Image 1: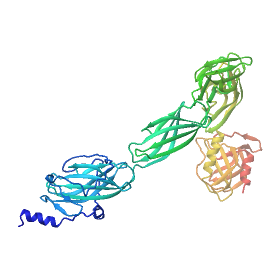
Image 2: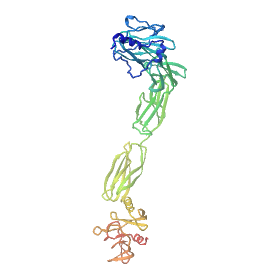
Image 3: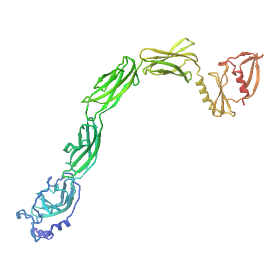
Image 4: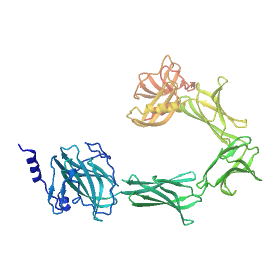
Amino acid sequence: MLNRKERNMKKLKNIIALSTFIFLLAFSAKVSFALDDEVVDSSTNDVTTQQAQSTDENVDPVNVQEDENAGIATQENDNNLNAVNAGFDLSLNGICLLEKGTYDNVGVAYETNDPNIQFRWLQYDVENQKWSVVSDWRTGNWITWTPPRAGDFWIYVEAKTSDGNVQTSVYGHHHEGASLQLNGICVLPSGTMTTMGVAYETNDPNIQFQWKVYDLSTQKWSIVKPWSASNWGSFQPTHAGDYWLYVEALTSDGKMKTSVYGHRIFKSTITGFSVSPDSVGYPNSTTHLSASYYDSIGCITRTKFILYDGNTWSSIAENVNECDWTPVNTGSYLLGYQIINQSNNVIDQKISGYYVQNPYATINNVDVLESGNLTYNISTDVSTNDSGAQYRFLSYDLSSGRWETIQDYSYSKSATWHAPHEGSYWVHTEVLLRDGSVKTFTKGFNATGTEYRKSVMLNVANNYASSTNYCLLVDRATHKVGVFKGSSYNWSYLYYWDCSDGKPSTPTVSGTFKVQSRGYYFDSGNSRCFWYTQFHGNYLFHSVLYNKNGTLQDGRLGMGLSHGCVRLDINNAKWIVSAK
């Protein structure tokens, strides 16, 4: 086992003398690892922030002399090591530098068994070839280093144990300094103020901004926001025109970037003017006026709604955005809106012609259109200047002598009517004008439901096929026969006839059948039926009843009367017999 003296001698053999600082630079180790913005030595919890000390004196780390009693290793210019007290172990394992923009966090990795190790940091300015102390002897192995400018530097650390063992390390570094990029100007008009901001990217927390405005009409610059940390500024233009908005941005190390934006300030103007009702007014009825304007330079001091009655101009209201006017007389008017500046000059105005008339209405017709079985859409064909007219619809049943309200007064010109039964009616409409007068119109109408039932029958027919070009359907509810021409599943109306089918006690058979025998006539009791067509057993199409001498016996149609056959007008019955 070695004694203390032998161990010290072994350590001395392992010491490599520092011949020159350049030699150290060539063989220095670098270690990189992540660190927070604050740098804390794990053994001392010490945080250091110190800017490099600028000095005119070259500080040579190799030739710095220390007191022998402090136990610091000393090296003479002849590179001979005179005295080392190597009681504690110490090795430096590389410098770590974390760039933070205008400053850097710098630390050294080390191994030692000495709890009281101290560090000193120096910088060498390659351009000026000068040394200066960054941080004098202290216990923390990390510092915050703020280079005096952008450029190339050596950052040099000395570490010593409490018994004087000294180790050193050096790191070459190019310091970029603060970076700054401007990414465009944003302009936000707000009332009479114009607000502008600049988007930017930087690593400098202390960047400053200054805003200027150039008036192209006067060709003059003005500072609207002096140097500050805010990237926003604002100004109030004094007149409409074109301006340059110019920003300067300055980093803490003196770098400047600029940006400019062309911006137009528009003149004060009316942006909206409306009158309601918009076309025609009525005596003793309220007319509403509203307006708005844009004032970019704060020159508007007064606004006015005005009226011309054909003889003189007058003011309706001032310094409001909306007002009401109630005309008394009919006639033609001019309604307007003005914006006025501090010199009492009209900057802008809007004028609109306006007519005041007595309300009128002329009812041209009442249209009744079938929309379903005994269901009708009723609408009033009316000419009127009264946008507020109201409408009422009634029906009168001639069979019962009763009036019924279809739809009471409303602003709708149409209504839906459900006729209670087939028959004759009056359809009546009333138009109530804003002055209280009422206009009326009455139309006779026969409710049959025919069109609706026809459409239903056509839909049914198109579900059937036929070996001929014809298809016949019987509607026992309405006592109708539909004759269709076309092809299977694609039929269209040819005829729509009245018929008399079977009475309730002897109804006409239901089903799908084909035409069988045909003939000129047959007799049944004292009745004769012409032009018959058999479709199922004793069920036939034939004419209405005649006497055997050829005179008409019972010509009624449109009701259930027969023993099951389908009676038709004699000409219609003949058509079926002759159809092929």
